[in-house]
Length: 213
Length: 78
Image 1 (cartoon, each protein chain N blue to C red):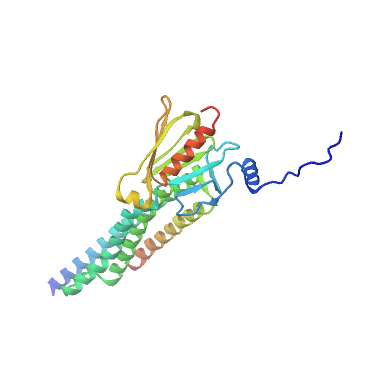
Image 2: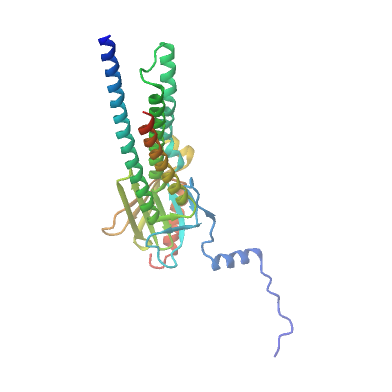
């Protein structure tokens, strides 16, 4: 017998959102820029050994505030020659070298400061932690000589916790995230990452989502 | 008169020493920057971020070019 009255299925806004979420479980949120240290579902990033269908859920670097010490050092080094010149002026003495020598040494001095700044910046820039829908990847790079890439599958993660101790960490909201893994696998520690509570929450969600967990 | 000549020759030889010192320093700095560029390239191969990776590589290359220019300037004007 044919139905005479069939109730119209009006999709509510909430149902639409849920459906949208199902289609793309991790919608892309934003591009990673030069100073980005925390980005959920980023796009435009590719890493070595990325598997097919592996999506980056979280992109992490140390909080930008952790760069303050070397910025201060470089700034002090940058203004130091002016102070030296001022002191020499007050003492009414000068450097016993021709002007072209002083000029070229001065230029070189600022080049060296820039080299230091660039090295510190790339050290910060290339220390990255990635959380994908399959694993956690930790990329370490230190002072030009040390480079390591470590990864652990989400199924191997046993416990996730964070520590946020200190005034600066509370003000800028950053802390250390520890990822304890099963068996002989090394534990992961992401140092000074922004919004550590959110990182732990996301990781816990991923471990919960994982059917093998 | 002899003293003056001696002082002058000492001054010139110290300037030459300064020049050699500067050129050596500048050469080491250029080598250091080449290592930086190599490391930036190798890290870009590990992880590539669409915009920033290219910016860093460009900065590293410009830095090397400027350092070579400084070395050559030092060689000519000192």
